Image (cartoon, rainbow over all chains, first blue to last red; front, side, top):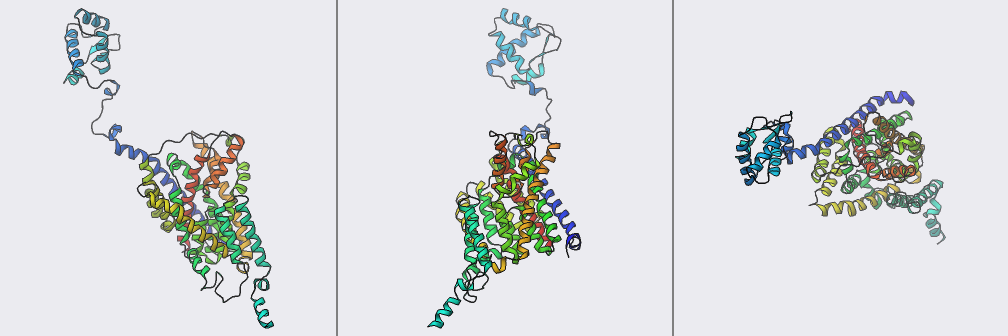
Length: 142
Length: 375
């Protein structure tokens, strides 16, 4: 027997079709697994990188802060600035705060205000003024 | 005394020789020439070529010299071929040599290795159409995988009588990769496509490399258990290599062990091509189908790569599709060569190794599937 007749008689079409499908399916699944392998390993090595899987949901706000903790002298400086801010209105201007700090003889006012901004203790109110974030302040000086 | 001389002469090769032995000896010379002078797969073609000379010395039957005589030394060495012992040992060595980094960096290229296996199944259909039995057709089809050890392993299991022609066809076409593939590659790709540059692959971690052979082995062998002897050894060899702590074993696998297996396999496969057994119409059909199989496998890889480009954001160079056949690393080198003819600063070799090694996995899985269908 020859030709298509021989192929059909020996179930050739089905064997070829199923064979190609199995080879493809196997290698597609394998390629998918190995494409995810490095992500799984990265997760096992450092679960914190995958915040969507961690039980503590982040507010997303903290990520933008450059500083997440303060040194002892920075904490002291923050407390002094807190006393100054209490004398001001809720929405205050930074030049005024700097002037007050200079008048009060606080050390390095520019640098320390910058630290307050970086740590999120002083936040812009999006109208050109600034606010004192008391929660953040309490958390960082603990 | 005269009678003694006559009897002696009647036992010499000069008296017993016929044209078939001469043809096979000439083919043996061609293999040795291609291996030594043209540098086409010398590690395979030289042992096979010399094996052809060994197997085609006309001998007096009954002395226990021929490979098909049960009491001969060659027959015992050939046992490793007929029982499928040498191919898994060669796969162990290949595994210990292979770096799967590029495949791990771009797993999507694994699909090119799968696409090239289309050639295996289309040739299987072709062989059936030419009147071969299903088991013989499956053994012929696997030539399209361009993987000598796999072809020998499957043929030993399904159609032992065809080991000689199939092994010689498979290794011949593997050696002729630089001749067969480039015209097909140029025919099926445009210059613009051949100029595509590949993205730099990401760095692959050690842990990934260690886990990969275990995952690949488990998945592929659960899917096609008949691929166990070949894939098991391939993945085991690779694990020895990547584990580092087993470097001594990996070193042995990729040097002494694979070399010993290759010498014994090449010599005995060559010796199995005795003119009176080898030169048959079936062998000629096998050679024609083998060439077709190889061409179809190459074309399937190229066309699939072009099809992938329709969906991928970052285009891949379709020449990589030709490396889906598992002639490692020859077809990857051919991709590099053809790519560099268009743009000498385009380096595709590293990228082509990904489909190339996935072709090894794909052809072993295809062999396992065919074996399980035919068993």
